[in-house]
Length: 121
Image (cartoon, rainbow, N blue to C red; front, side, top):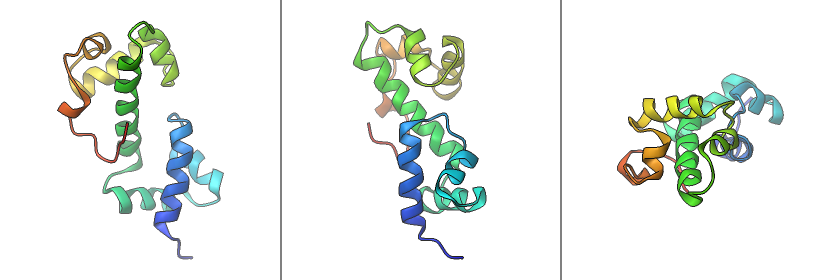
């Protein structure tokens, strides 16, 4: 069976935008395609794997949440992003950027300073 990967990607991306914690398998099942087909759509349209795509969206959302309301605790930002604790968010951000959530919030790094493909804030 042949799929229109552009339309398939749009549907998958729409679901992912609502919940960044969803797995590729869950997304694929939600629209009635195989995991392989869904993964192929992500790769064909973005040039990256689903996990890298989701990671870039998560990184962009983390920057947005950390900077839009400085009074919001990092713990709440972590929960909003699907982490169980601020430590998980901190590890993710340090691994991807070299900076902690507090440092990012304080302006040590801007999203424009790093390459985050396929993401709009």
